[in-house]
Image (cartoon, rainbow, N blue to C red; front, top):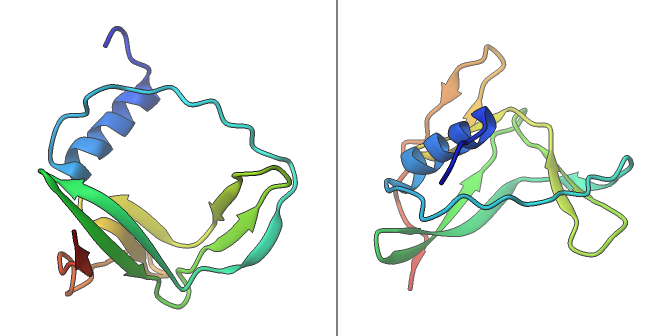
Length: 116
């Protein structure tokens, strides 16, 4: 992979913890972040598909009140941004953070919504 930046090393560690495997490659992505965004609203929940081993699994995360980020759009095509909120991405996926900075672990974590 060559020499990695500190940020790349941090992202690889996050990938290993979340996906429970080594990344196949490191991909550099150019981002054009606009200076102004349109706020569409707050996110009550988010759904995403990921793989663990050879299985593709759909997960949803219901944000707790006070942890909900804003869903924003940029002026160009393909520009959605999740801004703010109190949460962290961990090996368990998205975990809300309470007002005192403590992780709010979900007792239903690991229950899959849909398998394909």
